[in-house]
Image 1 (tube, rainbow, N blue to C red):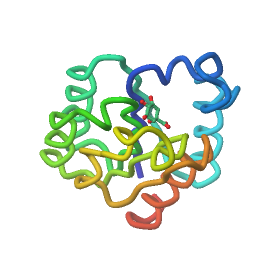
Image 2 (cartoon, rainbow, N blue to C red):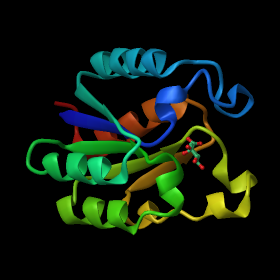
Image 3 (cartoon, rainbow, N blue to C red):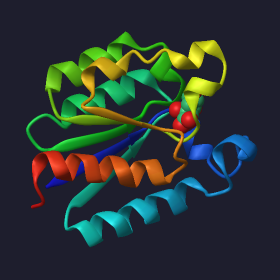
Length: 145
Ligand code: DQA
């Protein structure tokens, strides 16, 4: 099973940005943690991060035909991007939405998620462990390979 982990804008700043909200773990450490979990679960994992909406759409489209599941934290584009919703619907790859912080308990605009409709599940407010839970959700749905 091949899983693609996509992170949107400012998630490359993990460890630096608002540590009281997002924690002190860096983006590089997050990738190591997901890689170790994927190895333990016997699945392969690819990573993509961009601060640009179109680049995220391009990467989702590229995944068509070569990826079994997508873990996606679109950052602020969660709350604005119909293009990401449409891209996820277009490729129809099982996707799980992740948010490090509990977006339901922050500003009202963060409670809106355009992509949620295209996802089989969401993991919200579990810190970076949420990415591992999302990987597990995809494995449970798709079977370990
Ligand atoms: C986030 C929450 C978003 O509202 C915010 O814009 C982010 C990160 C999270 O992981 O908690 O960039 O997606």
